[in-house]
Image (cartoon, rainbow, N blue to C red; front, side, top):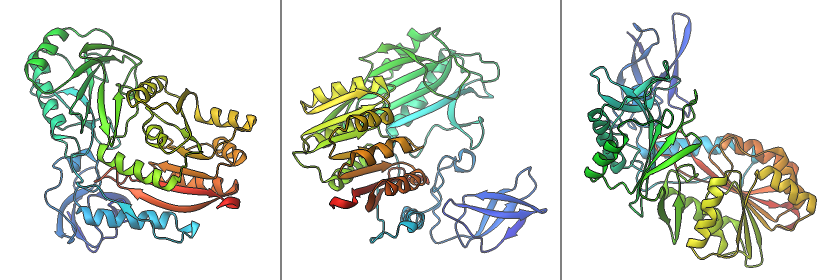
Length: 441
């Protein structure tokens, strides 16, 4: 054991210590604390907090030390927001923004996730259990009450484990590539109360499947549809290419604001339903869309932002590479009786480049790319098309920062940046940047 006093911590709540002339990272600490570190193990770990920070909370997640998925479980939500605000403002300091970047909080930092993915294994007591991967490894930490998942999802997980154990359904073993159940994937409709359960199996064979489905229905867990997804590949990707509906319609509906959306197993849908409404309202308030505007919604998923934007615009064109998502997007437009949207299945960069070659008139671009951000070709195409405003929604502030420099080189300035805390208790945050064409502000 060794004491470390008045430790220094960056944005990610880890401190660096030195022991036996080697440096190690210690998790779950707060700036200024005194800690006791257990040095008897292969890798030093936090043993005890000797002088706790006033921001430390004691009712955090019991799995935090072993799981590592949530970095702020030991920190009060108010302090977490302060840390995120400080981090974001420091990250974007080189742009010399006129206003401080603010962060919109969630009503509650817990039980906000509408999506749950759990990985399976056999316990030492020969029971089927599931959990989350330990940080930087494929070791499964058994978790049956995640504080970020909806309470109903946690209840379903516990019951499914019992049903699988009762029916002697073997979990998948990565080493031998044998067994049946790899993952379960749950989607919970916060506003619709509809629930989708997906079994991800090691191939099409699922012995005992009918008995499992009967037991699930008998348990009355509120599940409205059950799907089996086949994934026999040696991969960490959860879903395979093929699936079969075992119960119900094979999808769920969810309502966000005034709109209803169909969600299929492979469709992208924001994991925070409450935060999604806050995020989209913020993005559209910045867009300044008028009734004469033609709007591009790039990386549109199942068309959520497109549908929110349609009532303000003359026409919205949604672009998404995932064909399943585009199918759902077209259905979502019909469900909501919206006629001024066109959805196109295409790579967003390819589509924007094509528009640039044809000199198509575009007034506003809304873009919500994946975590790796957009591409230079996409942004260069925007620079050629010269839409008057671009609203960039990003789940990774670092890739947003990188892309903003490319926008500036293409004749755009940053009007404002604002955040939505879509992922409380983690270091992730959603950022919305409004850019305008220099010549026409």
